[in-house]
Image (cartoon, rainbow over all chains, first blue to last red; front, side, top):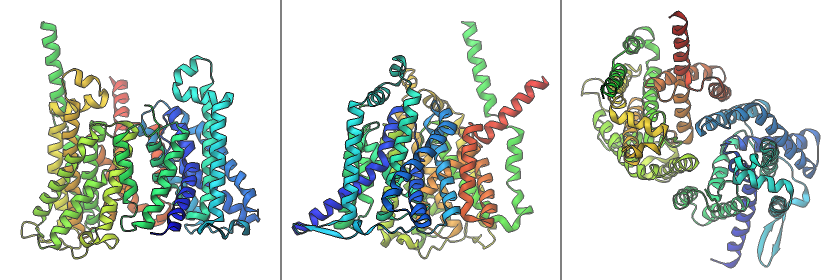
Length: 288
Length: 332
């Protein structure tokens, strides 16, 4: 085993982990706050992906300009769903929530197939995001570097925002103890709606960024759901740091597993998840 | 003292009244024979419905009665199917041998995992069942020397039933066989549900903390019912493998686990006939819709799920029960 592949695999895994972090951090925080099992989270990510693909291929927008639109599209759609469908089920059991959101995901798959066919949606990334650099014998893809930069920037903004802003303090209070937060006069429903929109927007951004790595077709909503759920449950509900650590762990073990032991394939990830959950049912950083 | 004694007697009478066979139940089971007369061209579909109903019945035991949400129940279904299929490839093609072996292996796996299941609840439990299901799917995918991998199992040959009835193209034997298996298992489940054990399961579903306090060992009960449900799912899988003579990775995948959950909730979880009614409606609807536009079938399923959750929280049978109750309330 030479020196270069180890770092190459680590880097690819880290970049993949950043993608998973973007896709899953919103679900982790909303789950921690409202205990609402939102399996349709990846459907919002898929919406972001289709927004980017449509704007680029249909209207000729540059790639970077479509990213905020992907964020916005997913955020706006999620608020509409939250108001109409999710709100009545906050006090229902997790089975009802699972069923409602699985139903929405099924519908999103069919709707995407109706408008965009079941074919892959290719996009042409700009030339400065293609190609690669070689640093000390390690090949770093330009697009993966971009992914790492976006992921780290988002993680930093979230960490600072949740720690130092008034809104962040309200979110932390609501995750810690929803009833107490209400008692202190925090508008938990309002905080939750904004958090939900932000989280879904980040998923939409992740969906747009994922096109270059894994492609985009109507099954995106289900294909990534398992990974996102693994990140959330291993990282611990409501924990941004936990999501980050779990996403990086999962991204690296996935890429390393595919590179070094292709025969075992995705077997390893599921095994890691089951063992992790049995060891720490509340996740790595979870407190409940 | 006399008051409590009579109250206990009343409770016992009420419980006994539940175990009595309702005329509608006789009508239901008589109606299951109708496909032989009315739809002889759709017996293959009918046997698929019976198998799905059996699978949904097994999920009903753990989800509807014991309150364990599982997203990986297809694991046991697939174990039963692969056991029966692989045995027949190696020369043991007798249906009952395959059935017994599939049931036994699924039961063993169910017993082994039940120790994990009994320890966790809520989201962790859902994720663990999901992970175990995917683990088994990947294992079957990798062990292609045994299972045929993604190409499916080759060379499944099922012998004639009781040495006399071969499985024909039209599905006469297949439907008769799956219907009999379904009925026999249903009788056992019905007995189980109305036993004290079945009652304590419902108690665990309603309040897992209080049940141990009144002397019911929750974990032991959950282990027991999970194993029983695994056995039934294994039987359903074995019957599917035998009546269709094919086994593919599809018997293990997430879609199947999700589908059976949908079927059960659609019909009404926690009701004996919930899974049966759900299976009939779901399978017939799928048969009809996939003829028109297969790629949009999932849209209707999704819409149906959303509607059931929003408007019919106890499934179709729950809605029917509420309607008849309000109707009775008006007439009396």
